[in-house]
Image: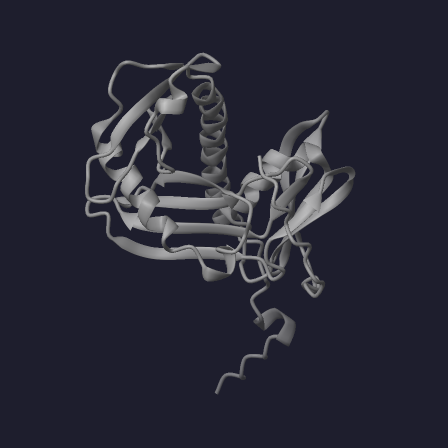
Length: 272
């Protein structure tokens, strides 16, 4: 009989941990979409505030942005459950800015986006409903016929707020709720003072890779700290820069996860 095969050493039998870079790459693509959405929101809310008839306009919190054929749009109006959305303002990107448009926005999005925005708000976790600040809200179409509503803490004048990235997925055809994907830090929401010489750590110890909202925060806040690190289950992720410009992502495999035991700072009430 042939000799029995030798047993492999124990360290070779165990599958080595990974930094889940394929998952990260997909989340990074989503984060870049969120950055574009965020820019459209910033620019058009400034235009909205300057509208001469703004004080008398009928508006609700269900406003949204969308990209169509490479062009960004922003729509503001009034939503009441069970009734058609009343469009008040429609802005369209032109060059590096936006202009108010007399054309009607895409009717399919007008019918869908306010409804899922309203439905998602009802699903926010109880532990975050007491938060006195604000969340920025993003609507993102997914490839599988779903639509995602994502909540990321809004940044404040003197503090950045981290600790939550909340996504609610709906069926785009029926508007039915499908699932929630709530990433809440082990320390909850934290308000951290901006510090160009300091390091900001974002805890993500329950997940294999940084979430879209966490990557969005690294990309959007990286000039306000010397370094921002996302501590996921086994890997630490940070952005590499050269001359102030983003160059690449660095993922470092850790032997042990960082401790999460310190009382969080309570985010202040002021908001952007």
